[in-house]
Image 1 (tube, rainbow, N blue to C red):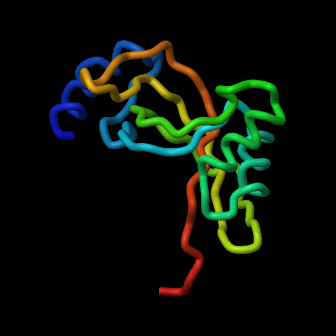
Image 2: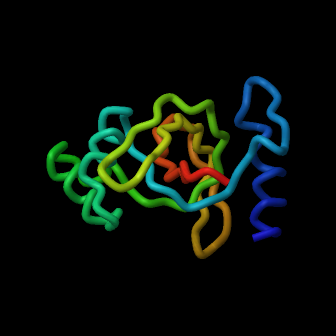
Length: 125
């Protein structure tokens, strides 16, 4: 993963009009959706099985790629919403995806804004 991060840090600055700090660039796997409404719908449908909820949103949208699990290189934005279902709390965050991680390594993509769904733990420490 360290190699992928170094490669991403070499590739990514060319994608930004404004300079980004290295600590703002993340690599990780997560659920993303094209719209905030799709992300909120994912939370409503989520029962512990992310793929089932993704499939349901995609079927409702008649779009097999509306939501997906991806390993990506991204710059997170601030949280837009905190949403809950009966068991889990999530934050919805708009992220700028600038690369994807494949078997061949990090592949640059045209930057795209999507909505990431992050499970959060609200228990007191």
